[in-house]
Length: 193
Ligand SMILES: C[S@@+](CC[C@H](N)C(=O)[O-])C[C@H]1O[C@@H](n2cnc3c(N)ncnc32)[C@H](O)[C@@H]1O
Ligand SMILES: Nc1nc2[nH]cc(C(=O)O)c2c(=O)[nH]1
Ligand code: SF4
Ligand SMILES: [Mg+2]
View 1: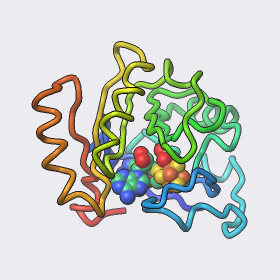
View 2: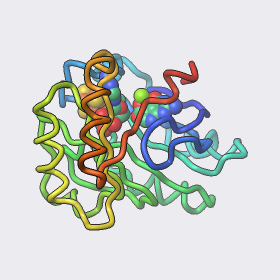
View 3: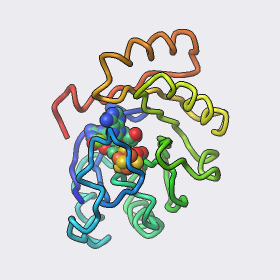
């Protein structure tokens, strides 16, 4: 759908320069999704893997974030193999609703109630990032924290439109449950893509 060089705004790798590859297509249906224009893959022209890799290696930052849409709709073995062959560090943002493919240095799993993640992906997550839209999302967060590996980083991220209401609850929750950390969408404060 689009590619851009920016700063990773969310989660563990927040603050790092990275080339974003946003793949079109998602049927998870989060009503608060901030990239709804990504849902219909047919609206976006196809780009060859070779061209994406050629674009990605033009920049000084040698990390790529593959996102979407839901990137795991596609088999990402070939893309990540080609990126790694060029010395690129590979990160993915996924809901986990589709089978895991690709060779990843960092997997961010962001599970959604609207189409729950596959049970087999949780052990591979390096980071669990739960979006907090209402209070019930804290329970959803703990259910998934019980499925990830002991080394997986745990983040609570306010849903953008509910941030004023949810951020104080997240702050309180993290202070009482310090295995969790807050993730903010810092790129939205910085006014960058
Ligand atoms: C647009 S999604 C694309 C990747 C994948 N479909 C997923 O949901 O993980 C990228 C990240 O943005 C988060 N996100 C999407 N809409 C958001 C919103 N309104 N507020 C906060 N985070 C949001 C998602 O949870 C995910 O972690
Ligand atoms: N700067 C920046 N950081 C991000 N981290 C995850 C994003 C995403 O949409 O997947 C995103 C994004 O869209 N922009
Ligand atoms: S899974 Fe990701 S891309 Fe799909 S609707 Fe939810 S936030 Fe948007
Ligand atoms: Mg985004």
